[in-house]
Length: 310
Ligand SMILES: O=C(O)CCC(=O)C(=O)O
Image (tube, rainbow, N blue to C red):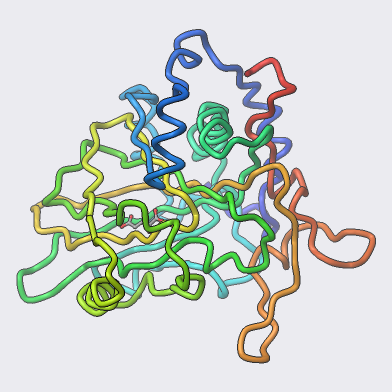
């Protein structure tokens, strides 16, 4: 496929084309009241099998095309976001904003079941896409490591007002503990003082765990082992990361980050420096000139309690 343009795809139009609706079978997979209580207390939740093998296998193929550079478009900027390229090498590949570049991902990433589950877990009446990304972790030689450092997702989204952001982690195959799955620290979304934990790329597990233990916190680590088609959701304030991939196969997962109805843009400064999110450059502006986090082209509504797909 040739490069058509350097503008992002219009996700509102893509969503219209896809014309999704939730099936009766999908509606039966929504979290129960006990599941919602579990999520609110623990900060994470694992679903039943939500996506078919056919869809996950298709998205796996799409990811391989993406890595070969077969996309519908390129973003207008090359930096300011995870944009792994072959020449970068390394054991972890992190590519953000994949749906804005390749329509075929949207069958998964804009799927209303993600919004319907997230809406219940976060107790909100609307879920919009925030952003999505694909993370591949190569088999890791014993002498090396491919951990993802302990971090919280909300620390990367300080321009958002919400405390209810969520991540949906969707592996593209069965994922075992040896393959370096997502690991969450149980109940840590309620811990104070982690709002600047922007350490996805740091080898910080020992150091952070020692700090928590010293503070008298119980560090209960839960490796998120899933079967193909299952999803795990985590609260934007939950401390998480992942271990090295000590298996002999690559580990691929898509992360879809979601925002609740009330999330809006806020100005944010850190150490006297104004912080801007990459998407602030792409989305439409409010009449005040500030970024609009409800722009349907970039942040489409995946699910709303007013829609037929309840
Ligand atoms: O896939 C991984 O190893 C880490 C994913 C992650 O940090 C996330 O889902 O927020």
